[in-house]
Length: 388
Image 1 (cartoon, rainbow, N blue to C red):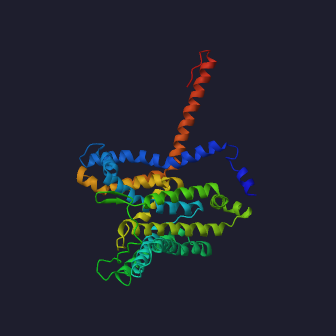
Image 2: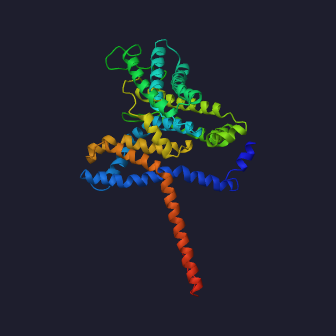
Image 3: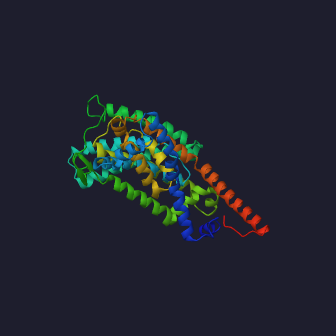
């Protein structure tokens, strides 16, 4: 029955190459449209700050990729943005929207830092401590996502409302715990430093700046998620459950079970993002641990049209913006707050993609129709045909 569903789809008659090309265009159209919409905003911000029209764009590039230090900083910020974007994308495959990545990331980071800090005193071997630290973050992230999907399926409460509330609870819960039983006893609000066995060492060192394998690990996870969704029967069932739940149920697919699994996987990825920040960057948990990576992950996901295999591209764009904010103020004299304006424009342009695509489609259709009318008039008057 699954094969019949696929055969009855509107694109069933198209060749595999055409379908792959259409999917590629749909995936990359988000970043392209968003960047095109953000360019005039960058020019306006530059002019309003008294700089040249393209000074902001040049400053963003130089602050993100202008040196080895800048490139390492950008790639370091890619990890949480990519994983939270991947978390949102995976939940969206089942047509669920996980807005709670910020809280799941925070609790996952706190759990992994507390575990690694406590276990380092017991001299656990690195081969055991390193995976346990990541597993703890992923498990806590998934556990924090469970109430939202349970309320969705049992009580009909929309997951967006639930996850927003869960974010607030998680942030304040982390603050209470890190100032209390899980803190290091200081008023700063932090856990103890994790042991060396849990720390990811840098694979590339340039002066004081080091780069671990965390961003490359996150990219590999994104590609694995893409191949799992596009090349396995389970991925087909997830997409079917998200696209048309009623038809999927008629085909024998357990829609509710797949929704629950994908939402828990989404929470696990967000918790894993927090754990990787602990082991690769901060080596402990702070009260102000995340500058909003969980919310930026929503932008990263929908910039790539929720395609897991392309979230790395939108994640790189947002990581470059975050890495360049201080450079803008020091070298160009533009406030770092302009980054948030650009991110808002990116998100708005993504939200308006369907209207933009429809408008462009109508424009192309009108141009083609006008060309056909003109060609017909030339034919009736006996004039030589001209190509539109």
